[in-house]
Image 1 (tube, rainbow, N blue to C red):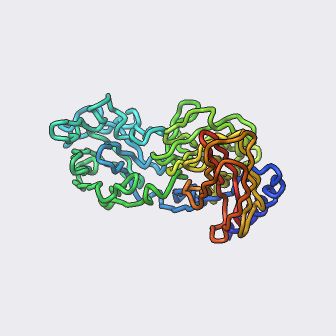
Image 2 (cartoon, rainbow, N blue to C red):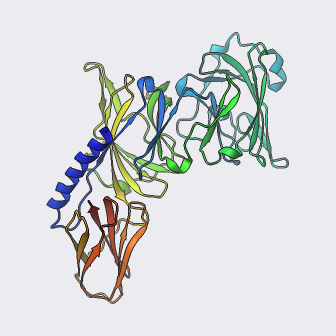
Image 3 (tube, rainbow, N blue to C red):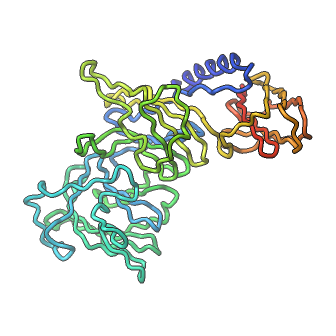
Length: 425
C-alpha cells in the first residue's frame, strides 16, 4: 500500500511537471520515491532492481561463510556484518591441524572481507598474488587450488571453529572444506559443488548444520544490496555498517559535495568497487538522536542492461525498523547516448499522453539522409519505428497498448541525433 501511495504522488507530480514543460518538448523526469525495509535490527538484507523497482529479501543470519560461484573465482567471504570473525593461525600450516593453540587469539590480526572487492574475501586477505589465493595455491597443471593455511573462525552464533579450505577443483567448480571445534571434536568435511548455484553471485555455507545455503536471488534480478557489512571508519578502524553494496555486474559513481540539481554524471569515471554507494550517505546526530542524510551526496548507477539511474537517499530510520528511503530517476536509457542534435527540434503533444502522441519534427538546416524515428522503453528496447524522407514532418502514433511509464523518442539522420522523453499515462 505504501509503495502504491508513493507512486501516485510521484505520478501526479510528474504529470504537472511535464505539462508545464510541454512548450520545450523535452522534460526532466522527476525522481521516483522508493523504500526498502530491512526490519528490526536489520534482520534482512534487501536486493533491489532499478528497472522493475522489485525487491527481494533474505535473512542475514543463515550462513557463516560464502563462496563466489563462478569456476574462475576463489573468493571466500565471511558473514562479517552478522558477527563472524576470522583469524589466520600464525604458528603452523596445515601440518598443525591437530593441535592448535589459541591462548593469544585476540592479539592476532583480524581478517575481514575487502569492502571494495568481491574477489577479496576474508579468507583471501593473505594473498601474495597469483597463484596464491590467500587460503591456498593454484596449480596450472592440475587446475586445483590446494589449501595451505589454518584459520580460526568465530561463527555468527558465537562458537569457535578451526577451518581448513582443503581445495577447490576449478574444472569441477567444487570445494572441500574441513572444520571442527578447537579441541578437534565435531569434525566435519563438506564438499560444496558451486555449479548448481552459478545463476547466483554467491552460495553460503551454514557451518552449524553443515549444509549449503541458497540465499540470494538470481544475479540478473538485482543491482544493489542493502545489508550490513564490515567497512573502514575514517579513523582507520574496522566498523560494522548498514549500507549498500553493488552487484559485481554493475558500476556506479559518487558525487559529493554537489548541488541537489547536479546532473553532470559523465564528468567522472565509473567505479566497479563493491561499496561505491556504501554507507556514509547518512550520519547520526546525537543532539537530535536520529539519523540525518547527506543531502549534497548523489550517486549514478549503470545497471545490468546499462541504463543509467540517478540515486539520492532521503531517509534512514535506524535499527528500530530498518527503513531506508531513497529516490531514483532514469538519466540515460540503454542503447541511447547522451548526445543531442542542434539541427533537430521535436515537439511532443500531448505529453503526458494516453492513447496518441503527435510529433512535430523540424530541422534548422536541410538534411540529405533519411530520418529515423523510434520509440524505446526504459530497457532501450525498440517498440515503434518509422523511416521518413529528408525534410520536416508531423506524425501521429497510437500508443494505447503501451504500459504506463516513461519512454524515449529518438530521432536520427546521419550523424545527427536527438532524444526526447515521453510519459504514457
